[in-house]
Every structure is written in structure tokens, then in C-alpha cells.
Image 1: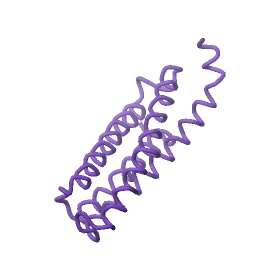
Image 2: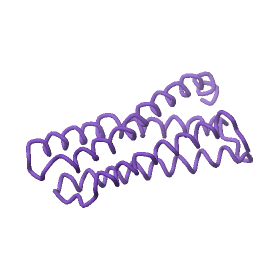
Image 3: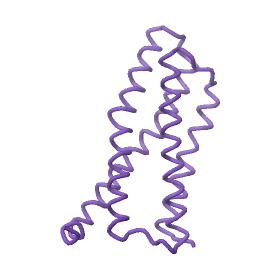
Length: 149
């Protein structure tokens, strides 16, 4: 079985990269939707309902599946030896991925608040949070490509 997985490694890596791109697109876009939702829509309005549909579809149709595929492909690559247990860059990437997953969960919880009409955060909060995935992406890419430690 390992021989088959070894031969599929380039495909697993390609799938991982594609899933990460889709996941990141959602992580960049969802907080942006939250900014406009918080600033422009009143609870129960047609605009509120439109934002809720957009946010739910982005999360459920793109972000959740992309995150799951990225994790599965990443774990397969770790199982095939892609993780250097003695190198700092591997741990920075892994920690950043865990934080990224936490950010995903935080956004999912915020969406539920909008659905309940209970959002108490300002557009500014979501603008600031919009930078979190960007910073994490920089850490991950530098860790994996440059391997500074």
C-alpha cells in the first residue's frame, strides 16, 4: 500500500495545494462579507438574508470541504514522510495550520451569530480579523519554501 501512496505523492501534493488555495480564498472572503453584513444590513432585512445565504454557501460549499481535503492530503503527506520532525519550519507550519483551523472555526461561529441576529461585532473587528489568515499564510509559505530554521 505504501508503494501505491508513494507513487501518488505528487497527486496528493497537487490536491493539497488546490484545496489550500480554495480554503484560503474563503478565509480571505468570508470576513469581508462579515464587514459589509455588519455595516450595511439590519437584522431581518432582505440584505441580511442575502448576506446569510452568501456566507453559508461560502462556508459549507467551499471552505469546509476545502479545509477537510487540505487536512486529509496534508496528513497523507506527513504519513509519507513530508514532515521533518527535527526541523523548526515543520512545526511552524503545523502550528500555523492549527491556528488557521481555529480561525475557520471562529468565522463559523460568527456566521451563526449573524443567523441568530446576535452579531455584536463591528465591521472594524472583521476588517482586523481579515488580516489573520494573511499573516498565517505568510508564516506557512515562508516556513515551507524558505525553511529559515
